[in-house]
Length: 489
Image 1 (cartoon, rainbow, N blue to C red):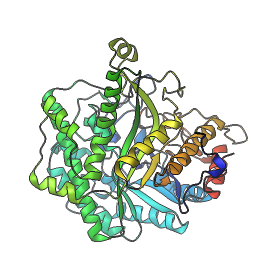
Image 2 (image 1 turned 90 degrees about the horizontal axis):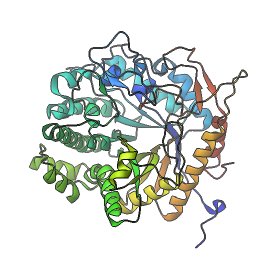
Image 3 (image 1 turned 180 degrees about the horizontal axis):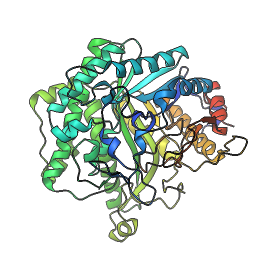
Image 4 (image 1 turned 30 degrees about the vertical axis):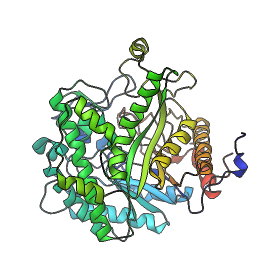
């Protein structure tokens, strides 16, 4: 059967086109106006070849790029005006927990932090942009990590709920769309301990696989479980404050293919998709742990702090929609020789049919269509792609222009596949490409790994004017939005 031509592919009326950022990679001003330190403020810069590391206390010879970000804290009005110029319908951003509660367990919130985000949301409303707010995007307060072991402690649930109560009440008339935890499924990986706020040894690598004991594995999954409970409680509270709230989960979408048609590879790929993607969303969308998770816990001697009250909360606090990031796909194999060649890669084995970016991320637009169909057919709830993009080295010319045709080509192919998924019957409601303005790379801490439509004059070590300028992709995406995705030329 021939595919549907692009002239027949359409996005639904009211589709939410926009872009995405995160407070810890964008705002800077890490110690301004009462903000307290987060774990990410103690993660150094790195590169494609050298990992970022967590250091506590800080080391004077290391650079901590998240502390300055791109100074969005002082330039948010300029940045939001640029988003509006592109025609954004929605802007995904996050709130820094430590701007609201500097230590996480404070008795009273920080009013200057509350006012900052109110001003940000009012600026969005001024331009008719709908905020999509991530409540917790890798922003664990350092104090909660050091004193309570982060999400490994049940106490952190209540500290989180104090924070959620404040922001839901303060912004109930300014924000409709919320996401509870960013890429919550990353905690199913050993490197996820740091993201869950569990204290790490000084010099622990960030986003890199590390060995762990059975006790450490159980602590990590207990931390994940506490995030599930906190998410459910946030959904229940949010609906009581404003029944019109739309609250979603957010998953790091990882499409996995079997490397061969060997049945063992088929099963391994299925298990990788289940465990890597669907364990967390089954809990958040369906309200209970899936059977394969229970088997994993049995087989690996994992014990979690699951109570009967938790089981009720998980059922009551199911999310309204599913959102996810999508950057690449990978292959799965049981062949020890292939696994040895692949090395210690968190993203699996590279597909020989696909090319990779300069940072080794495989470009697979059709994998996005595949993933959208897998998710929607599993859950039958609205879906949003809230991160997607190409990290690349951009060159700013003497006339200020940035010719990033490679980014336009990448995005064109992914938008075409989203349109195919809509034609397949997927209820896709929005698209917010990652790093709509250049910001600090989460994985490497670099600035040269740029994603944005807007160029920010900042170097890897914080040098530069921080001035903003429009790339070619800026004008291309503006045209895409204006045509509701039909003009991709």
